[in-house]
Image: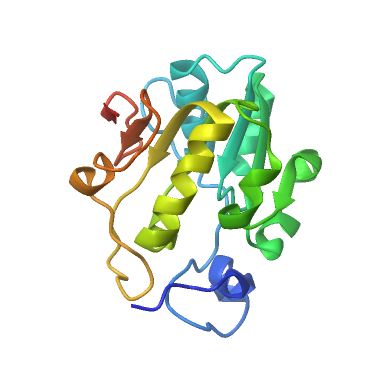
Length: 198
């Protein structure tokens, strides 16, 4: 297995249809996904995810951080709903492609080294969506104490990938054994009613 290096989260990773692919790990086009996902859908995949997080964790006016925010779609939508949301991502390309309204709230940074810049309990809520698969076990175990330090509450979605040469598959069994802060929610799908609380 060869996990991607920070420099590989570039245009080829996020928008592979714009140039020759460097690998087969990313997306042909990372964009808004307009579709109706049920009775209370906002009409767009990332906005639905943001609304689900906003409602479940009561994020009105709360300071929130997304780890691995990519182009910042969820951060932007959380801000629209009323959260004081921010995001970090290792990809300067992804953040350069964000919607203009959210640009000032996104930071190009490597979570493995950047979280120590935040104060203890600086965020009411810290979350990630399929970010942990991009880390080795050693990197993840080193990151968790920092997540616990900066966030009062956490939610992390994880899973497995068919592209196992680039990602570490994460399972509920292995994730719930890790040293997340008590009360951390861990999930494997967009359905926030199906989470395991650490």
